[in-house]
Length: 195
Image (cartoon, rainbow, N blue to C red):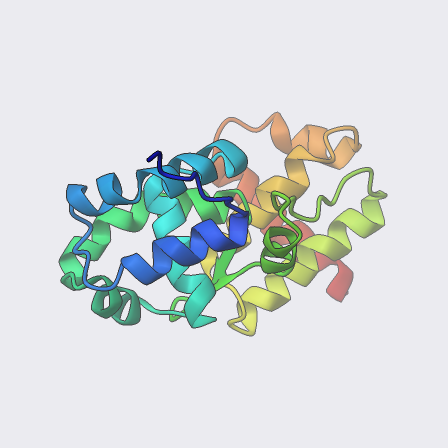
């Protein structure tokens, strides 16, 4: 008798990964036993296994900090650091946000997954210079009020910059030699709407 292949959806695969991850210790055996779900999600979402595991835990907890995630997976906080590059990748893709204390899925992620579609972050493109500067300020205020952390702020600002290359102000900032110089100009640009 042949084993019937299960019908996977984005949510069912993510839920399976979460349910099987309790005390998995992020060991190779866990990833091997759940290879079908990981392969499906990698193909559909373009994320790594570590990003998928992290997202599964955060999605099911609603919000999570390092300790909550470490306790669920049965790992030490030091071992949690293995996930750092996965977390940074999700931040850069704007799939998660964090405020230095907790991680959350970005607005719209769960809704997209429930509709069995990949998440597309809101793209701030084709903005006027005024709207560009106001958007910089909006993200700075979210950071200042501790709704997002510094890495999320920088990711959002760089996203704004990359998606509005046609604006003269963005072209000038992109001509700067280093990211540090670009960030300084973005910071000053974010303060202009306040005056």
